[in-house]
Length: 463
Ligand code: 5AD
Ligand code: SF4
Image (tube, rainbow, N blue to C red; front, top):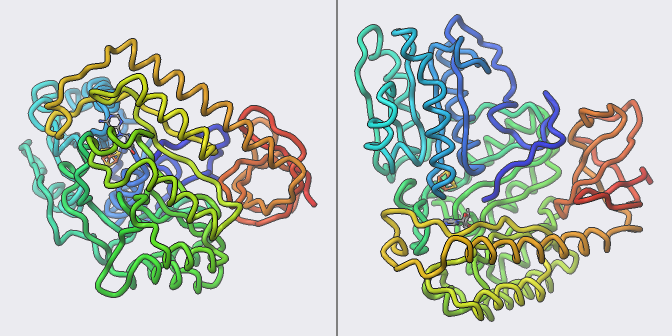
């Protein structure tokens, strides 16, 4: 899953529903909460669940931690840097908790699971630690807390937890995240997520459809289905392909995306189903991690270089204009220079639209954390830089190849700099700036001819 960009975020018309752009809960009370989110889209979605829960209890949101009765930080453990950033934030706002004894401070998410001890040691002001399967305890925790301070923790996976019946706060924009699966059963050697988020479980199909219907009723036209291996979705009442079919039938829903799939679950029947559904976008985020079969085996990714390439081919056969984005890790323990070159050559073969590229970060508790790190930090950074440089070239090539095409653009919002310029996206997940005129509304789909590329953004004229 990749981080969200915010270049064109405008209040009320967001690219994606982040915590900073939920619909302002109308049920405002006199209690206020501050909520900051780090990490992936799943965390953003979970924060929207928490926002809904707090709105139901009469809390309204504030951007100012100094004015909050409840300070929450939803955290990520996927790389050390993400953890350090969240700890830094917690440290910088802890004085609000010290100054006002009635304020409560909580850590949510993966770090609550993974870094309990060091959080409490470094930020003793923390009152609440809730892991990803325990957000529904928040209400009870708040009642218990007044007026005496006590530490409350709810941690560890709860395999039964799918937050059935709880729907996330709707976004202010026209695109919404919908979690369809929680946890992960893969055992990728480098990844902490199975530890922090527990085993895989799928939400009932009927709940996902119901949540999506409600979102569409509120003006959402595009959903991004979320799961750690989302295309392995399998609920009692349906498979992933059946879910896509069911969503395609919802009147008013124009686009369906999903993230992150695992390459091995792109079966022939799933690809065929996707190709036949007009709502399913022609963009697949397909995490690669490495182009070397030996490294992939060591990572326990369950596919080889050739198998990955065959899956890409299969998707392209069914959807010839599909675009791909990916995740790549540089400097995995034991990765040789030749194996690093295999990643570069695979990138040349596929030509991803974009990639989310990371230096390997050992996570205590994962399989690879026990492997000797063989790549020095400068070498890791040098390999990463090479990957980034090649990807930049491919990104430009892919975008340049669109100039002259007529594309359907889903309008997201006006640019902050110039109200006449709107940002929208093609089905391929490419950003396009257009001048749609004064009647433009977020969520509208317009046809535009692509006229130019500037940096990583396309420009178009309404056709
Ligand atoms: N080090 C570096 N990158 C990692 N990712 C997951 N774990 C690690 C790690 N230990 C990357 C993977 C994954 C993305 C969400 O984060 O590329 O797909
Ligand atoms: Fe999301 Fe993984 Fe980070 Fe947890 S560790 S927040 S699941 S990216």
